[in-house]
Length: 400
Ligand SMILES: Cc1cc2nc3c(=O)[nH]c(=O)nc-3n(C[C@H](O)[C@H](O)[C@H](O)COP(=O)(O)OP(=O)(O)OC[C@H]3O[C@@H](n4cnc5c(N)ncnc54)[C@H](O)[C@@H]3O)c2cc1C
Picture 1 (tube, rainbow, N blue to C red):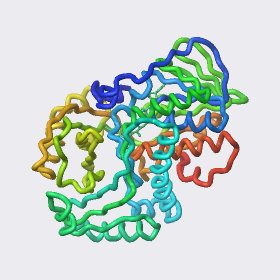
Picture 2: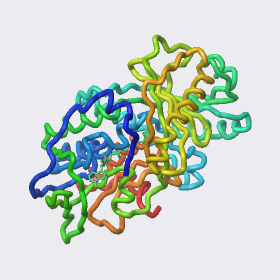
Picture 3: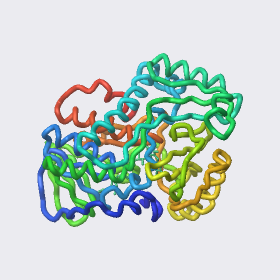
Picture 4: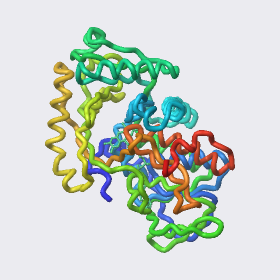
């Protein structure tokens, strides 16, 4: 599968911070992680830090799958609003899922700081904008439910929005907890740190077969090498579904652009993350270099050729929508790209064992906050390896 068009920003801007050998021999380990994006990197670091002998492989260069296309807004807000998630999974599971995502942002921040990873991590508040007046009662209810579970947020009415931004909206929710990062540098930084602790990393090494054995798994690579492991971790992103023929969410195409650095960004309150209530939603963030990222315009197909043919048109639409919000900010598009994206019915990730693969743990962070789910997956999978009970694992199980 072609996960991204040819110029997602991060991998172009960062180049290849490191390349790794491909696997050329048979090996055995405790854990073999399939996939070297942000999810595989987080899982692998959690495992080596817990003393698990871990090997990670990727069929591409490290971090050049969906991770390189990610706009990397770190949000606790799941694509499904809390009030709807309560209806789908019940109040306890819904509230806990929101709490876990909120906690994941702080954990990512602390992990990057502890491992001294230069990845432009920044704490940012996040603003959810209503598109229509009729959404005000829903937003008020969402506000109350989130406040009740201890989330710090403010309800902005129309004058409050107008006082902080150059556009008008009938209402918005302003949350303190959010963040942003360069996901490509974070991934490389995690793997570099993991290697210092004994992690083996191989790129351009494709898993072509995953075989369950009596005691674990046997992974065969494209060049015939075999990896024998106690457990496999499938962190192969949106390709996992086709790779192992499992049911896990729906795939789509999505679009993003990044601007040239702007001389100044004014009229954008706290340079917060922003997204709106549209289907698909429009979202925005800034970068430490003063660039603006705009994303959205999703399409319900994955065909890469069809997807990429729409990049110019989608870029124009995204730029136009940005111009309506910030007419005084001169946005000059530097890069535009498209990527595959996944969604689940309840907006939650799939993490854990799939009935067909009892010796494999899946880490599939689908949805708009895939990266926060990656951190949650890393903790759950580490606990599985250590034989610890993780009281949150059931929230993300297959077949829920
Ligand atoms: C345009 C766009 C915007 C996004 N914005 C956000 C956002 O703002 N916030 C957010 O949290 N998330 C966002 N996401 C989602 C986020 O990017 C993903 O959740 C995240 O990157 C998934 O990381 P991953 O490591 O699971 O997958 P990937 O980065 O795709 O890594 C999986 C790796 O597995 C490898 N692989 C696959 N098959 C095999 C095989 N057979 N053998 C070996 N290796 C294999 C691939 O080569 C790949 O490198 C966005 C996604 C896109 C496309």
